[in-house]
Length: 135
Image (cartoon, rainbow, N blue to C red; front, side, top):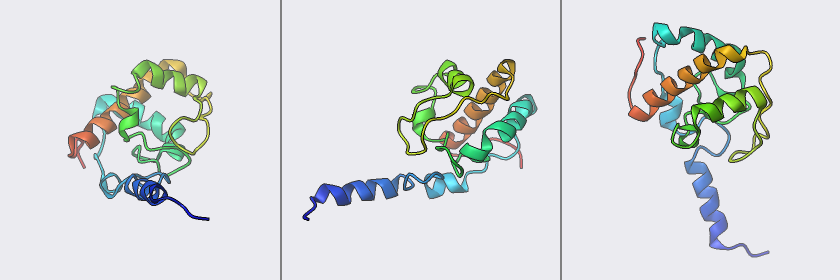
C-alpha cells in the first residue's frame, strides 16, 4: 500500500514535539526551576502528592499525562478556572493520547488554587527560558 509524503511529515512533526510520549523536548527535559518560592511551597507539595505521578515532578509529563509546560496549558489557552475544573471534575481527552483526566478527588477544593499557582510558576519559568527558583 502506497503512503503519501504527509505520513512522513506527520511522523517528523510528532518526533519534533517530543513524540507524544511525554517529556517534550530536550529543553523541557533539562528544565529545572529549583526550589519554589516560600509562598508556593504548599502548592508544590500538593502537586507532588496529586499531580506528579501523571504530569511529572516538574510538569514535564514523564508519567501518564501530558506535560503541563506545553503551550497548550498556558493561561492564554487554559484559564485558571479551567485548570481548576479539570482538577476537580476531570477533563476529556483532547490533544494527547493519554486518555481522559480523572477528577482528583483527594485534593481539598480550597487548596486547588495553590496547585494552579505552582503550575503557573513552573510554566512561567520554563517559557521565560531560565531558572526561576533557587537551587
